Amino acid sequence: MAATRPPIDRAFLRSWSGIPQAVGHQAGWWACVIWMGWQGPLAMALFLGVHAWCTRTHWRSETKLIAASALVGIVLDNALAMGGFVEYEGSITVGWTPLWLVGIWAGFGATLRHSQRVLVASRRSALLTGSLGGPLAYWGGERLERLTVDDPVGWLAVSLTWTVALWVLQHLAASSGPNAKG
Image 1 (cartoon, helix red, strand yellow):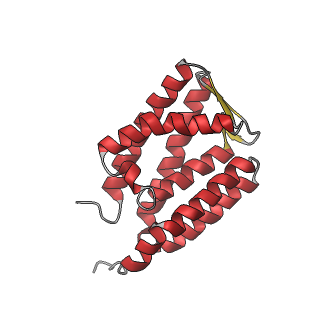
Image 2 (cartoon, rainbow, N blue to C red):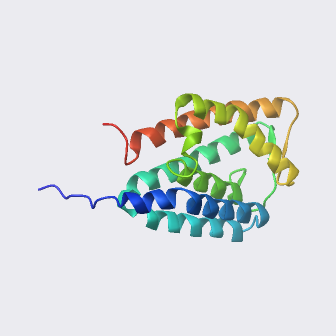
């Protein structure tokens, strides 16, 4: 006899998936950028804990997407750093990727089926988000003095790696979520 999953409280999930989740994610994002030691990633972990509680009826697919996003971010940022395209600030690292940036990637993964789902709503939007949004995010990181991108080849590398990353995350968000087909 197969176990039945509890029904998804769609009204609650819709309310969490909008402004409350966006505000919580932004608070975690800013904490990671401002406090690059353990404090910022711990604040993002708090956001992820609240997110896990709010999406508990389908925690497996949410956890997979969050972990995949963190892993994609680690691979992407390590590749950019190893290639000499980007230099990051932060002393606590996973390879060459600062922990604060891993936290940002994990938080980003939590938003991909919710408050930022428009970024990966289709393959086209994911590719556009990656090719343009990646460089914009890193441009902001430069302005906040958290990273430095090597001109102009580094900007191309950021755009290309982010395009691939968002294509992968779009596929994962679409294929394994609570509303996935199949």
